[in-house]
Each structure stands twice: as C-alpha cells, then as structure tokens.
Length: 166
Image (cartoon, rainbow, N blue to C red; front, side, top):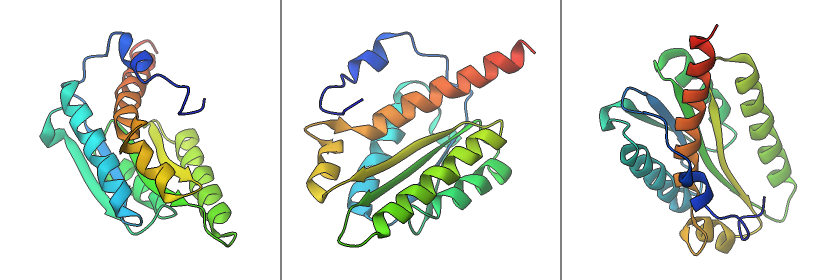
C-alpha cells in the first residue's frame, strides 16, 4: 500500500499484544545514517511505548543495507531475541546499484524469514530520492520506524501463539 494513502493509525487501533517480556533485536545500516538513525529512534521509542524493556532492545549496526542479511542472521543465531528488525535505506542513483542492493537485501531477508523461527521485519526504505526518505523517517509521512516496531511486536506474538498451540 502506498505511504501517501496509508493511515498508520489503522495499525494501532487493534489491541497490542503484551510485550514486556519480548527481546527485540534491531540491525541498522550505517549507510544513509541521516535516515536510518531517525528510523531507529522511531522503532526504539515505539517498542518502549508498547512495553518492551529498554534492556531487551539489542541494537547492532552493519555498514550497509546489503549487510543487513548477515547481521540479522547473526542476531538470530547469537542475540537471544524473539524478533529482529532490519533497518536500512537505499536511495536510487544513476547506476543499477540500487536494484542489486535492494533486490539482494530483500531476497536475503525473505530467506531468513523462511528458514528461521524468529520473525525478521523488513525495515528497508527504497526511495527514488532523499526527500522521499526524509518524508518517511520522521517527515510529513511519519516515521516508518514506528511501523517496524509494531510489526515486530505483532509478529513475535503471532509466532508465540502458534508455538503455544503446537
């Protein structure tokens, strides 16, 4: 769904799961850090708002969005987390680099979700320009980091509910 027509309030209207015992890992890209730091701040504050204890939010950084896949796989393996948020920002340039990095990161994060019992939230902005990224990292379209955090809480709760019933 397009960001310009999506109402973030729809995500928060439903009751939120209990999150006080959740451990959430966040792997954030250093590339385009003027954007990713704002997304991280939004995710971090929203996790706390919905009950995740600050000491249970584990943040690690990787150089770029392509490296998010390895960073998340290691967070799953060694981070003792219930869910992971991958935060990155890829801005289209003049070369095909955008397609290679965004495609590789997307496919890698999909594979982590398919192979692991730990949900990985796709928090990689892919925009045509810096202005679009800024609008989604605390600008006029809000902060997508908030959505990533809510999605992580809901997906951890989803995974737990299935494990409980198996």
